[in-house]
Image 1 (cartoon, rainbow, N blue to C red):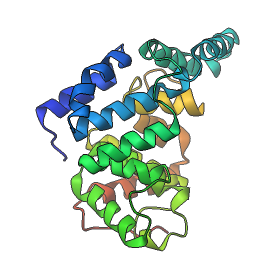
Image 2 (tube, rainbow, N blue to C red; image 1 turned 120 degrees about the vertical axis):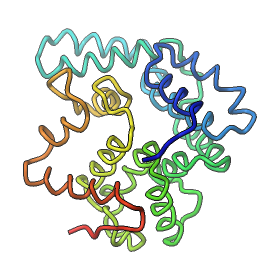
Image 3 (cartoon, helix red, strand yellow; image 1 turned 90 degrees about the horizontal axis):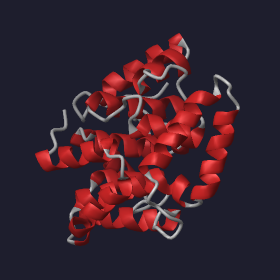
Image 4 (cartoon, rainbow, N blue to C red; image 1 turned 180 degrees about the vertical axis):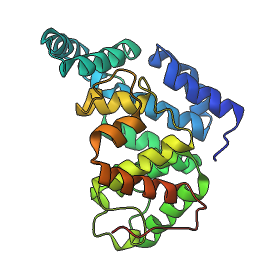
Length: 254
């Protein structure tokens, strides 16, 4: 399993737990400006997490109130997730650098400073550092070799439907929505915070409307018990087993 330095673990924990992500970003900025790859990556994560709120705080609050006012069972988890985002991001404003172009620039800086997670995120955003098959193959192999849960999670969208038909990813867990979920579940198994209030679970719900009905359900149990059929869940678990094994072992999608 990926074993990050103590400072990295502390920063990651603060990102997941702080009630003030704006202050978190401000505290990281000196290190980010000095070229700290981890700080640059976490600044981009906080900005991405808060982007939906920061673009229009008043509209976000109004829409959240409307959702909560529906008093429907299905709307409750969405309202909770949006309220959590609003509370953690309340000091962000539209002028903060949370747009797509700014996030790409932040992640390019982080990747060039040495952040593998940022490099993986750029591929998932359609803005890779290089755009050729050899690079994509190498990046996926480096992510698997790293055992870094952040890098796995960042790469996951690039390994889903976006990877269908990509010769560079032949022999990898890639090319379907189930493959994307497998990479995310592998990140959970390697140590990513996949708890009910974690960033992964919250953004799935607040941004995508994909929410667990049970407030205490974590990401792994939600995917395997609620989002997939038993047959698909068994297949995805096999892929997860492959992804968390030694990095030179691949698996061909079937």
